[in-house]
Length: 216
Image 1 (cartoon, one colour):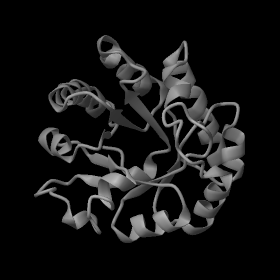
Image 2 (cartoon, one colour):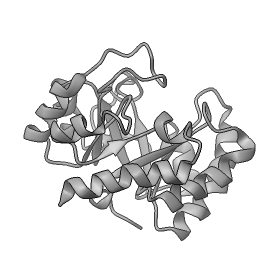
Image 3 (tube, helix red, strand yellow):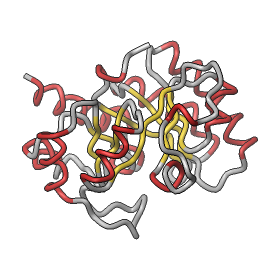
Image 4 (cartoon, helix red, strand yellow):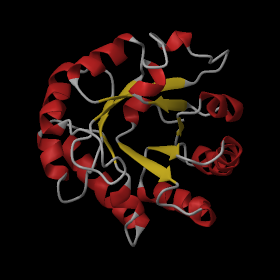
């Protein structure tokens, strides 16, 4: 399975944009387009439904050497043996956890990614043992319209100060990606700009190509 430091394009199966009957097909398109890692985010769905969806897409990802991230639900990640679970600040620190070793991971090899919206949160998340960070939201995003923007200044800070893998996230499109790369990002999360595209595989590939060019 591809390790996190080799992941650059972080894509999503977000049920806000992907109807249930298209989840399997969309997962295949993300794989074909070059996604390195894929998160299942299903806000508002019951846990049993999320579990079923996770079991549907995990074999597809495994066959493509792409790790699966479960958003929020550690119990589901454990049950299906996903590689990663992603938690927001409110799901981790506000819930009373100070280090990932305190999470009920049992004997699984699940690694934890954490969201961050400012330098202090990033430092705290790294000290808490996160294996990667989300850095953003960089731009206004329909996924979280109420969120306070972190802006490109936070991306520049991350480039200079964060040593573990981190992904810029929030409103990133092909049109503004150059500014994100110029600020220092080499890894990005993309949700709506891929999932709302008329050709998901083509959109995914376009982001991947830009990221690949930025590495050279």
